[in-house]
Image (cartoon, rainbow, N blue to C red; front, side, top):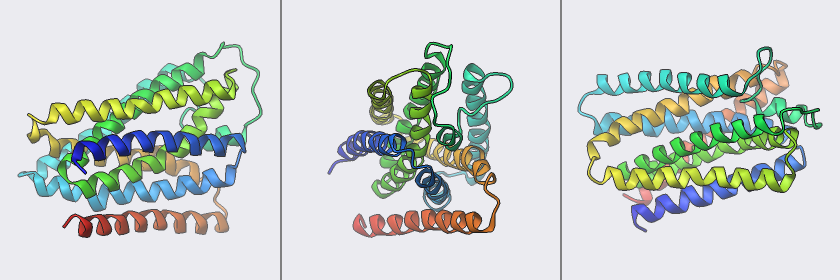
Length: 267
């Protein structure tokens, strides 16, 4: 398969499957499954960042110091972007926009007076997020097919709990299940759009690939550390902690395994 075929297949199928899986979890309100998925996703994101994206970026780049600078810049950039998105759709006292578990635990429809505004803002933020994911997946595939596969796996793993939270926010904003599913599916196509634009733009700008891989690593580290890990601290009991550590390790291990399998396959 060509690089373009891989990019289209993973972004399209990954987007659709993650939305459908999130919908199945949400409509059955399987809180414990989402909790497990979040722990696994943390491991997958950190594994993809530190075992694949970052080493590949450092290998391609001629200046390792500049590359780690790009990662540092990326973490700050994603912090600012998230602030802008949160600022748009959070009330002053509480903000659960990026906490899918909170949404699941409070799954009873809330009395809403915003006529779906918060749901729409969530969708706008998520569409932008998916567009960026598409850019990162395409850049990873263009550097190396197996890196692309691993990056796609990690990104899809964290999209599922994120979209489960989005579903509940949409339902609580007064949307029907069908509308929530449709909006999430439409939003997921931004991944494909971002990926295709990146593929055709990078044909003449290969020198940008290392920097985009650095940003991909920064994105995965930031989402894992800032968005997902804080939620795990809400369950400090020893049993939950052991489960979380085991699932994070499983996430890292599966990315390590996938990286090795794909690299041997394409060697």
